[in-house]
Length: 238
Length: 181
Image (cartoon, rainbow over all chains, first blue to last red; front, side, top):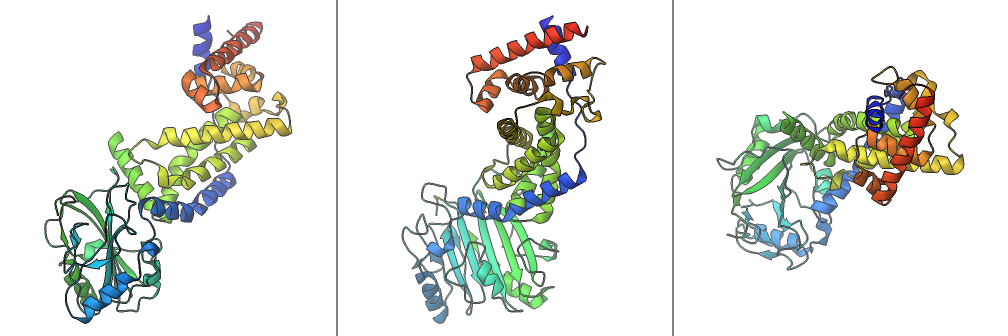
């Protein structure tokens, strides 16, 4: 009889009514109101704030640009561990390098704490990157002029399955198909391209923001000339 | 197919983490029915279920940063909803002792699924003391094991088993009187 009663109980699940539309609307509003906090927390967990990097980064970048050479900025295994140093065009500790033309500034740093796997973050722009910005270079984006380009490269180190990161088969560049009609946090007046790729066993998300929409082909070409100089090596083998 | 589903959800979660309202809205439409179903099955009261489910989805979105999106989302959301529902019931019972007349058991909202006797079963469950009603709802309607319920309610497994046993005994008596069981 006990088994019968248990069977009867299982078969007697109360039917669940449809929630009232106003309750659903309120729930959605409450949930979406959490987004900024979730976003901030996600970044904090994954990518420590850029503000920890010493202002020396920009000084070094400016110095490199001033003498007209390609630069690469490197930090140690954590943003605060070793400071920034100039190492020609290579950043072996993070396995990412890039040549910057005159007028560009950039920084490459490990966005993870020392205890976590290295996660390279790259910020490049043809304007002066503010020294006190966050990992998505929010301040820099706000200071962009119509012809400016802002490039952000984020390395994904989690065991993610959601995104597909196709292998990078040729030098990195963006094409028309990489442009998104809109992206959260990007000004409506800015064009935005995103590309995911994997290389040397690493996965990256590339964001390229342009100061006007649509981005003029000449400015896209300028961004691509920088992107094509990006080189990657496997971490631990650089 | 299921892998694809998890994969799509994982993408939505990651997009939502970057602040995408579109992805967040889609994600909400996945999470809300899970939270609502769990909340209603536990509380059996529309107003309480709405509050609990709203709190649950709020907590889900607040915790997006720490969710491992390679895992199925449903158990995670449901667990958050169960906890929110339990808290709602606890708060409710502190402010006003649970009165079964407040439950929606006789309303069209709780038309039972399953056999013709189900209505009587639901009514009998609703008449149980809160602590027993909870374990019955969690075990028989939300398919949690005794160990999982023990963790949710922060009780020894033996206590959960004993509550289920007492609930079954009461239900058997009640339903026999009504010639259901």
